[in-house]
Length: 306
Image (tube, rainbow, N blue to C red; front, side, top):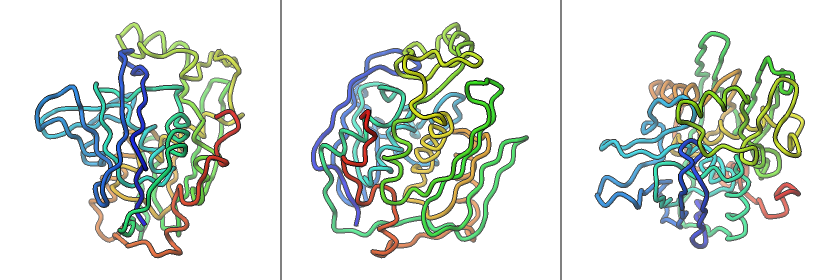
């Protein structure tokens, strides 16, 4: 069955790139509503933006949504991953600015509040997207691919010159709360030189050592170091879940990412939906529904540091 939040949940923080303060409230929504953003600082009918793959516009550093009137909301990947990983299918997200708050750079602040608030089942089946045939993109050494599978699986590989990261890979089935246990507390990461370059260009103004893992060569500059030895690849998987959640329903398939990022995952979704033989909508049976991310998850599944 579909689910929504039991009551409103509000988050306050700053935008990673703008550094501007922002308030965001995630509200319950009726069955089949899906996920939508509403810009409360815009007093027109153009204030609503659907959280869908076809609303994504090119952005180098994050996932950016825009509606037909040009109203945008950016850095949506962490809140989308938190909603999908917590099993929330319907929500209205009211936000008073153009960027989702970065909080600690992971999805765990969102997930913690969602699980504290609780969910309500709705009298409607979950419609999922079943992958029927492989769909793949290759761009240089980067690969993004979807293959048939009984549940959502993510297989990710990264390769960085920085010794603090190096080569990392991880495979995970996202069934039964695995996202909450394994991925939700993994933070965005960046090189110190990249941060300095972005700030020189008026970006990453809200970035600190507390809301991103900053590395320099073989050193982790953020206090406490990595939360997991392979935190970077885990965060890439978190991002992938958030970007795949823009498909409009849970995906039943295996996603493989090799050096892939936000833009490439969106291009993969566009290729998928342009290939009718490669996918189909299905109403989830009880057996299939039990394998979806977030089903059966509780506060006990949260990482100890949450």
